[in-house]
Image (cartoon, rainbow, N blue to C red; front, top):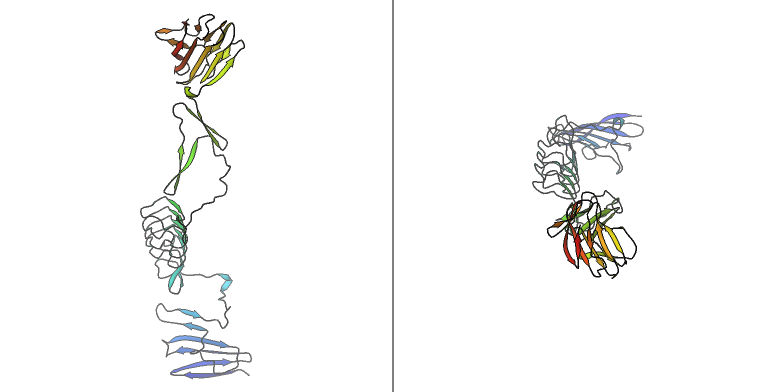
Length: 361
């Protein structure tokens, strides 16, 4: 049979209800700040005293806590429909989930905007007007006051920031004055430091035809464009960059014993071994500095250099006839040779050295 009674403890009297399967005692503990205490038990006893064995303690004082003490270690707080609602944060005095008195989860100061998230002991505790921040980790963005649009991940990530904005920091405290900066990790081999980096999706990927390389300055990544200097060519390809010498110092020599006309190629030399007049033709397009050489080794022949519409060859003060002229070696003159360079792209060429008898036509 159920019974109702009273339990006295000091100056406090508790009311209890004992049923067939357990008992409940409630009352206000005048010896403990007038806290309202509830104690439940499956034991049939009238001595289930809330002052020594409370399950729920409600402190009515301003800022007082509601404490729930499950009887078993795995006890859970079950909420209506699975929702847990806390007041909206306007100051770091409400709307906070704390751990041992320190802020653990909150949205900082933002009124009704609710655009920031701080998760971790003391994450974002210095916030005054900052917004659109995300700090995850103990003391992440701990010093931020008005800096906004920052993302910090890791213990003390972004801890050096105050008014800085638009930074992404992963396991890095940030640098005072940084804005719009990404910092990942800290170089070294100690705790929380890194000295290797692996990023999937980079190796073997062709990102374009511009000849650029990745550079690094104090762990800052960037790119640099490879520019060809005099006598050098740079040719980007699929995942390759080919750098080659194009100066006259690295001419490619060609042995010729067949009838032309022979199409000449920039930075090439031609050794003519025919017993007749053999014709060599300059290319229609040529860059300043492109070099061409011709020499005769057969005593019974000679060479003639022609060109395309709009082109000429200068030798000293003489100039060949535009389009229709030529530069010829004397007939059957063994050893006659000439070196020509392009001085105006595509149109004008100049003899810079010769040996033997050469005629300008």
